[in-house]
Length: 138
Image (cartoon, rainbow, N blue to C red; front, side):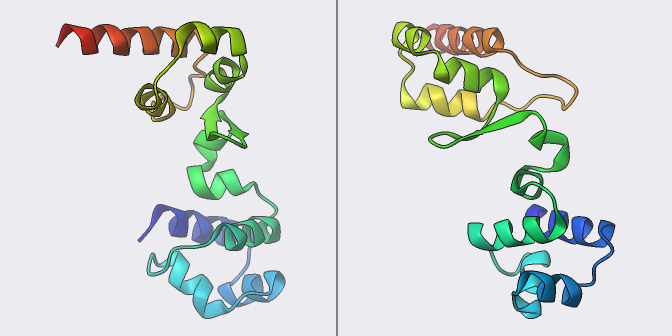
């Protein structure tokens, strides 16, 4: 099963819907909803948007999980990122000064922390510096 499929199933059940009632509510084929929930088909963003709307939850909750989605900002260019990283990416002076390479940005975007911790802009600056330091030391 896929994590997204599991999240859809859990959210649907929590909202008290059967697959059929949710499918009718959002005007999608119940068989397709079942395939997605069981990890046999990958959902499109349009489908996820419909499901989230029908369940009255954020798309980010389906994609990332509720415990993570509250910690992130969805940036049009970057996708979902922690608020501290979004602040760093929006700070044009800091970005010019640090000039992160694409692989460095990828490392920063893939950092995951405990859901009780909200990493700050400073956290991501220090993580980038630490990444560079460790890469040079090799």
